[in-house]
Length: 185
Length: 243
Image (cartoon, rainbow over all chains, first blue to last red; front, side, top):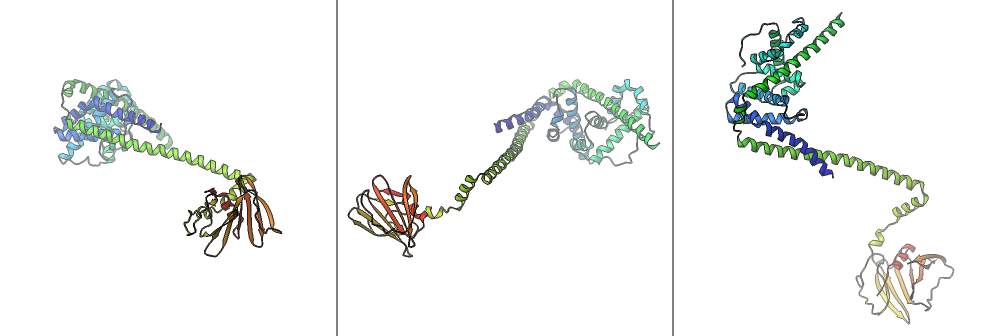
């Protein structure tokens, strides 16, 4: 009876991971390969993403919903970008003085007036830098902590903080109409 | 003033967080739309077999690890419950032993009785002696105290007697005769006591530093004479076997 209970519990978790892999294996590999253009590196990135994912499997309820799909793409994409940057000896984002954006930088109430343009704003932010949009989503939509994001994206907490700061700053610039025609890295 | 400013910042932060969340939802939709537009390319992507093999192996690893972890957890819970039951049982046992006089006495007797001397004295016929018993029909004790061996056997009429001796020259004299034959034992003025041997009444007599045990079964009467304790004589008497 004891052993039976253990097997049942274990199977629920295992089936979830297997189901995610079965549904999204092509998407995961494709996303990594599009960035790295290397089969082995893309494979390694998918390995890493699955390992990271397993530790947060409880946060995934519906496997085939858009939220899960986007979450997987964001994880794989960002791990792949990190690998890409390291390969080209690009250093992590240098630390900069984090300006308090809330401190009279822009009135948040003004955001609400432009809320009907949210889709366009999201697209614009992703155009400026997809990593910014991704990190903003992980923090505010998926409600992950800085520590959890750093673990999922295989990076440091400092790096996450800087990117988050830049994402917010870019978003403020867009909202102020100061967006710049910069392609994503 | 400062507190008011903090509250204002707090409210603005909530508003901003909600706004970021809202933008995030659109970003998710945009990602999904983007991936949907690349559906054909994604579906036609050849995933390396080595990736599938790695995944299968990884899942097996997770299963083993999870199984071990959960098993250890359940064993821990089970053992803690078992420990509680044991403690309760032990507590009940101690309470019972301390509160009920009869049980306390039995436990005391159990703990104070030395079984070692009984269990260590088993001897086989002729194990420690060259004396051979050639009677056809007789009773013989399967237990005698350690170190004792047959010194002499003697048959006088219907009475058969076996003398056991040890290195300290202590003797145990065991006599047997069919019921109705008289034993001549000098037990006058001795301290008599009634005991039970194999569910039959027997007499234990203490006289001049010697102990006598007299009893019988359906066909024979027996006597044991020795300086050994009453308990040892009783134990020898209980161990009789017909040869």
